[in-house]
Image (cartoon, rainbow, N blue to C red; front, side):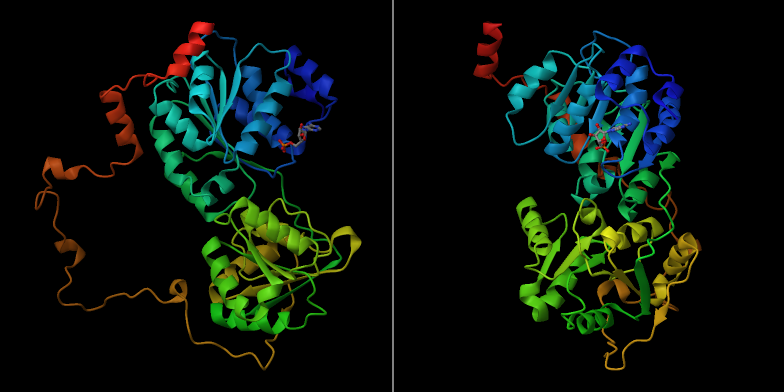
Length: 450
Ligand code: AMP
């Protein structure tokens, strides 16, 4: 397939020509018609696959020229670096299109951005916090937004932006197309999609279910967290064989918990990365692992995405990924450049279904190893493993059919208000109009200069 098959327009073809791009990447090929159709879409694609053009090509093709001031396309991304990068990509594609693109992010002077917004724009690329502040200041009007793109949804949620996103959804027009891109499927992403979107179409580049031949895979059945720690500790004590080990866990609380346990024994050999760690901490950890100062790196799926590290001797899946694609991404971190790589996956009883899904995707069974005899089987359970207490035969508990209905105890109107979060703040700000510039001297000065 070539870009000709996508039926673009001359300005886009000219821009692609200048860039020297002739063939759409797989995600571009797959996303084009779905995004063009106007339906809600979730695209699963990693950075480097051409995902930015995958959503921008159809958007730019269909965006008519306009002189109106309010933006019609909103792209939300998790970091300022990504704002800059996405703006650059859009500008490359818009070389022959007369449109106005602006990137805004926090940590910089908001007044400069307000002035830029006030000049009018078509596409705004933003981090959620700054976008919301600009909307709240009423300089930025979101009523004309037709397309909302959320890029790197997984990272966005991992960084704790869920609330900010929901606040933004509240002030966007209801009739709009939602386009989301995520590198990994996570439970958080799933939950956001289920809670706020109506069955979006899913496009993804099929992850190859064929693992590299030079990765040998094995697995252990292990009853619980603390026993998993015992097995991992046992393995890691063999420093010669386990010389560069990437340990994967599903979420950051687990990463911290595991780090604390392993730190007692492997203090100087251990580092961890997840999204609650600062960028500097993460970069330092990765560097120390890369150059061999630290032998063991604990990482979450989302944070390990961009990792490019050679000579990883073992990938240890401390938990069994629910999404088989994540397993494929994880084990692909070892066995690179034709070297031998090893992967081990730990599964509890609850995780057996996930093992089956992974084996089904690969069309092979992962050989099961017996636990070494010296391993102590722990009886202690972490919070998530403890059984949910179900009260049975509690004579004081009401039966469902006895549950009071609405008429029994209707709340008074004034007590029914709940969740006075962001949208409430926004409504109040709207009601008690604040001066647009709060007497900003610089604003007036600069405007005079024009
Ligand atoms: P992204 O995944 O959006 O971060 O894109 C990764 C890089 O691939 C960017 O530098 C793009 O300019 C480039 N790129 C995007 N689409 C194509 C294409 N069809 N052919 C070659 N390079 C591309």
